[in-house]
Length: 184
Image 1: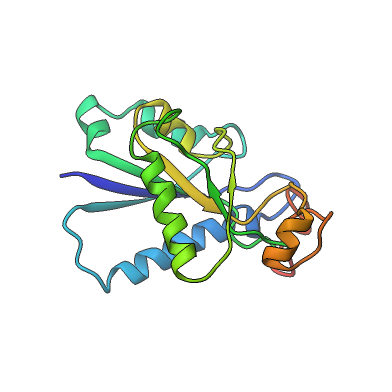
Image 2: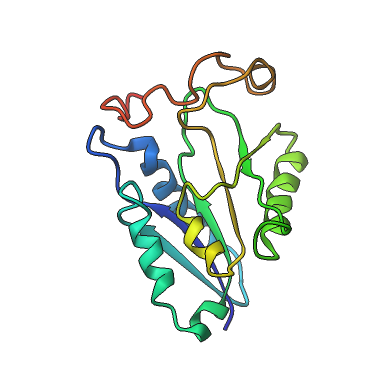
C-alpha cells in the first residue's frame, strides 16, 4: 500500500523551549490527524515526530536510511512542517521543483500554492535547501515539500504589504532563543 507521510520535529535547541521551533509543527500534525478522521482515504497516511532535527536531522535521516527498498517505494510523498507560528509571519511554501528533486515535489508545491490562492491568501516561495527533515527523503528519491512561516530570516517590505507585520524584523525574533515560549 502506498503512503503519504507527514512529519515535524519534536526536539528544540538547548537555548530555548521550542514552542514555535517546532512545537507548532508537532501540533499541526496532531490537528491534521484529527481533521483526517472526517475523510475517507484509500492509502495509508504516516505521521512522524522526529527527534534530533536540531542536532543534524538525526531522526529523519535514520528512519529513511533503514527503509528497505520496498518500504522506500511505498512512501509516495513527504510533507514537512517546521515552524508554523512565527509572530512576524509570512506564508511560505518550499520551492521544490522536479528539475532538482524527485518527481512529485513540484506537484506538492503546487498543491500548497492552489490552497493559498483558493483561500485568497498571499504566499511566498522559500528555498528548498535541505535545512529540515525533508532532506533525507528527497536524497532517497522520495518527493517532498512543505510549508513554514519563517525563522531567522528578515521580513521584506513586499512581505509586510502581503502579510502585515514589521519589515526589517525577523519572522520569529525568538528563533533558537529562550523566548521561544508560549508568550511568543
